[in-house]
Length: 309
Image (cartoon, rainbow, N blue to C red; front, side):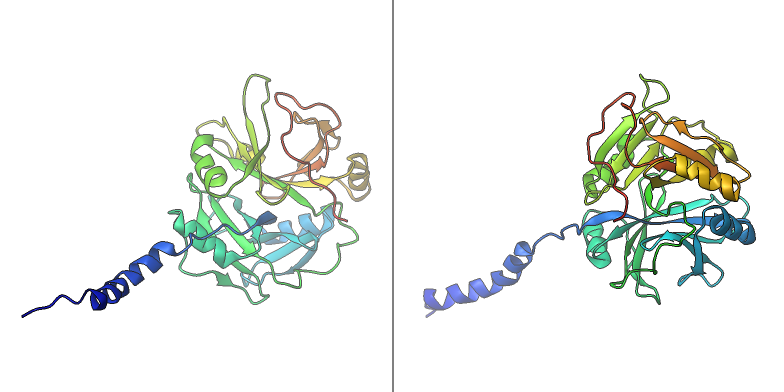
C-alpha cells in the first residue's frame, strides 16, 4: 500500500523548484558608466596628408596604432585620440566611427545584449591594454565602446596642440526618434541642446553621455544624396577651447589649413566656433566651452564641458 510521506515530499519539491527560483532571482545586467568620447576614427584616402594635417596644423602627436598595422593615432590630449587608417575603398565614409569611454567594456557588452542589441561574442583586447567592442546604432552608424587602460593612453599634452579636448562628435541622422531608442532609452544619454538654422526648425539635436558632459550631435534634415562636402560638414568632431581668439592667432602663426575658416563665427548655440577640414573633408569644429550669448531656439538643459585641469 502506498503511503504519501508529506514531510519527505516537501524538501524534494523545493529542490526541484530551486534552479528555476535561482534563475528568476538573477539580477538584470546594469549599465556601467559612459563617461565621454574616447576617440573618433577616420578612414583616409591619403595617410601622408592626414599625418601632415594632424601634426602640423593641429599640433598633435602621432603614435602607432595598437590595432591597425598601417594606422596611426593622433592625440592632442592624453585621454582622447583621432585614429586614422587607410580607407578600404574610395567610396568609404571618412568618419568611420565614434567611440565612447566606459569604465567596464564587458559589463556594457552584457547590458546591451540584455536589451536586444547585437553585440560581438567578446570584447577586443588591444596590446596596450585597451578593451573595446563595436555595435551599430538603429541607422547603421558604427559606435564603439572603449575601456581605457588603468595607466592612461599617453603622456602629457603636446606643447603645440591648440586643443585636443574632443567635446562632441556628430553625424547624419535621418530619424531622431529611431536613434533615441538606442541612445536615450537604452544608453541613457540626456538632452543638452537642440536648435536649427532657423528658429522654428530643428536641425541639431545634442545628447550628452549619461555620466559626463561630452555629447553626440544628430545632424538632421540633410538632402537624400548629400555631396562629399555636405557629408563632411555633418560628419564632424569638435575640439573645446576656453576662448577662440587665441585659436585664430595660433593658426595665423602656423598657417591655416587649406580648407576652412580664417575667422571665428557665432554658432546658433551662442558659442564662438572656427571650422577647419581635414584632407578627407571631415569638419573639425573648434568651439568655446561656454556660450558667449543666449542660444537660439532652446536653452541648454545640462552643464557645459570644462577645460581639463
